[in-house]
Image (cartoon, rainbow, N blue to C red):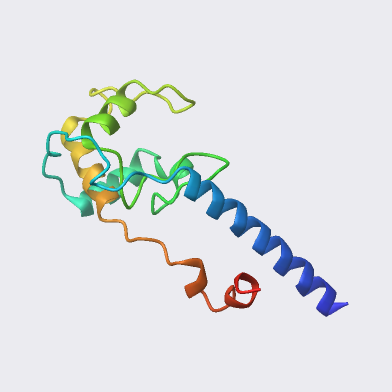
Length: 138
């Protein structure tokens, strides 16, 4: 019975990771070379940006590390949109995200949040996770 329960949990974990990996791959952000040229982002403070990301509630949909979720909000880090595109979307979103005007989130705060998003590390490759290796390499 214990083995059966573990197998059930392992299969659900693999299914969830497969769905997340596919969603991540489909929604992958373009490489810097593929992005259109844009003005440079204003200098920001990543440490303060992390605090702001939490205090404004961004983490509630996008996750504490901006990793996103297929159920709530998209992944924002480690390679966020160009600053101008992110700023425009934050101010005038087209999805379910509420608008954050400059009266709510100042341009300086948004620059700090952007610095935090840029500082997010790349997620580990699935095949680098020991528990998943036997399931991936079948």
